[in-house]
Length: 142
Image 1 (cartoon, rainbow, N blue to C red):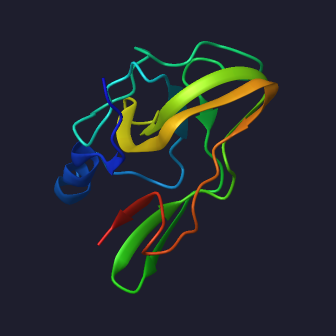
Image 2 (spheres, helix red, strand yellow):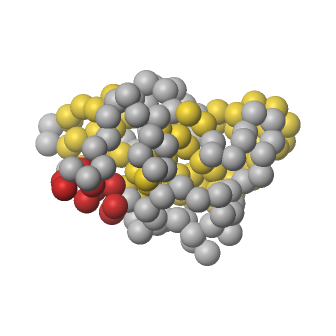
Image 3 (tube, rainbow, N blue to C red):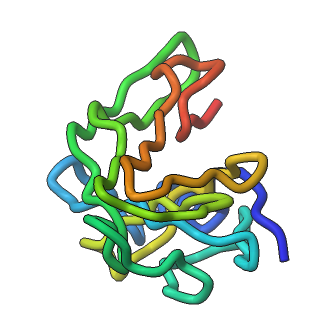
């Protein structure tokens, strides 16, 4: 099993062919996954398979992302959210995450690879999103 960070190919195709128009009013979510998950650029939709178990404020399906913005940094298009996903009173061990659009049949947007297991024990588990720049943003298309 492996988790590989990427903007999902299905998301890029949907942007170009108009079949999956993604809007600021849509509900985007982030789900956390164990090291047993297989997530990559080929992921097309949210699945509960190998998602971390419910704990504290974490529940299946994950965190509702807040503060959607789309911008341009030079020639790179960027999607960003203003609130870092977090879950309190949670005992979680996660290896990666999936950002997906729950308003559009749970279509996958991007996979995050944490580079190793990250753990919280009855505490707050936070995914700190990178700066909204061409070099660092989680979702960027150059």
